[in-house]
Amino acid sequence: MTQRVAGWTLAGLIAAGLIALSGCGDGGGSSAAVEEARYVVPTDLPGTPIADTSFIEIDDRIPGRLTSTIASKLSLTDESPRKIIEGRQIFTKAQYTQFTGSRVLSLDKVSCPADAVVVRVNVGMESGFPLKPVSSAERDKFVPAPVLHDSIGNTYWPVGYYYKDIDNETLEININLSRQFRDLNRIPPLSRSKRQELYLVYQVNFGVNLTGISYGGHEKRTFNKPVEKRW
Image 1 (cartoon, rainbow, N blue to C red):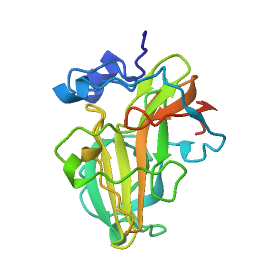
Image 2 (spheres, rainbow, N blue to C red; image 1 turned 30 degrees about the vertical axis):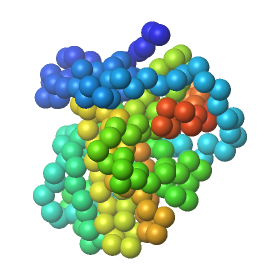
Image 3 (tube, one colour; image 1 turned 180 degrees about the vertical axis):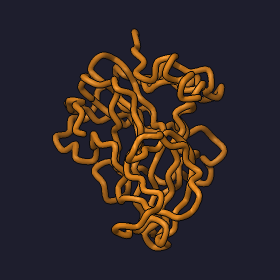
Image 4 (cartoon, rainbow, N blue to C red; image 1 turned 90 degrees about the vertical axis):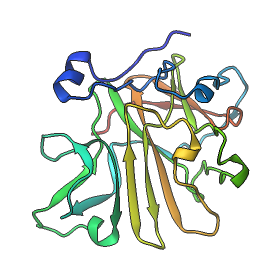
């Protein structure tokens, strides 16, 4: 299957100091663990057609604008407004509540190459595609994360997530373009007894149609969603 990688050019990577970006299309990058590399997404299995794809949004914004006076642990672009390139940081309620007119670090978007778009997938318990909690027996195993499929045969693994603990009023951002989040054990666990929000972040080639999503290698949903920039 021919795959096309949408990501930064080599010159752009060198200029930005990001030497390990693997792009957004899955080409079986060498950074994946051996167990991950053995997992093959079954693109030829029949899927369940769905009409409501509202849980999939073509949007580079973070759900909830961030403002913070604390030092950023995220790699950011230089332009204004600054965008997230990669990194992991946890914000408390006081740190991510917006204060109008405050001269502080302000973030609300994820950076993306010109030939790709940011796609966020709501996988919380109240969404149209909720993730099942990972059992304790699976904590030491590789549990495949949801994979997006497009109209030209590409597959896309998450490159990060936004996780909000509503009860404890914290928000975690984790973006890592150099190593895809193929294993659910790298993503915060969901619980049916807690109020949580979880969005998986993908980078998808611009101009294709998203045609499905696989979960665990067998729970595939099919649809047709054009990938067009909305910002």
